[in-house]
Amino acid sequence: MKSDHYFYNCSKEYIDTIDVSLFTEISEVVESLPKRETQSKVNQDLFWFLTKAGWAYDSAPAGLSEIPPPELQIENHNKTLVKEKYHIRNLCLSSTTLDAIWRSDFAKLFGKNLVQLEAQFGQVESMFKDFCGFRIAYSERRLALGIEIVMSEPIKYFSHRKSSISGMAYFEIAKKMLPTIGLHCPIWLIGIRE
Image 1: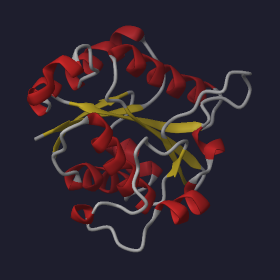
Image 2: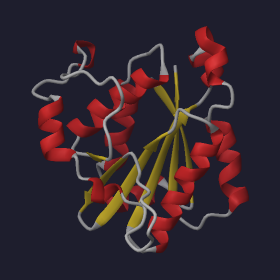
Image 3: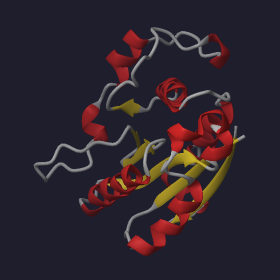
Image 4: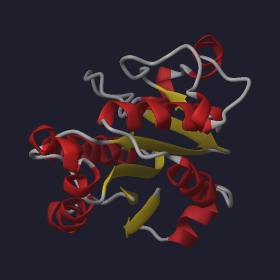
C-alpha cells in the first residue's frame, strides 16, 4: 500500500528525535500491507506487522488466526508468543491519573519516549476519541507522539462494500479536523491508499 502523511504539531524531524528508525518502521509497515476486502482484515495485518516490530497492544483483533497469513511473510511469530511478549496494556493507557480506562490500540517505548498508535477504520467520531486519548496522555507528560492510521479514500479502497463504510474516518477529514479542534499534542496522521 501507499501512504499519505500529515504532521500536526510535529514534523518528520521531530519524529526522528524520538527514534531515527520510527518513521521508516511505520512507513514500512504500511507499505507491506496487502489489499484486503474488509477493515477487520486490515486491522489483523497491522496487528501482525506491529507486534513483529515490538509494539505492545491493548487487545487482539476479532477473528485473529493463530499465525500470520502466509502472504505477510512473517515467520516465527504466533498468537501465543505475541500475547506473552507484547500484551502490555499499561503502555496503551491514555491516562494513569483519571479513573477512566481508555487505551490506544498499540504503544511502544523508544528510550523514555512513549508513542501510541491508533488504527481507525470506524466512524469519524471514533477518530475524535483517539485524538482526545493522545491529548490526555500528552497532558500527563507521558506521550511523545500519537500516530493515527486511517484510510485515505475508503470509498475507493472498499468500493465493493460502499454501504459498510458510510461515515468512516478518512485522511482528509482528519487533516481538516485536527487544526480546528486545537489539540496541543504531536500527532502523525497516516492515510492508507492503493
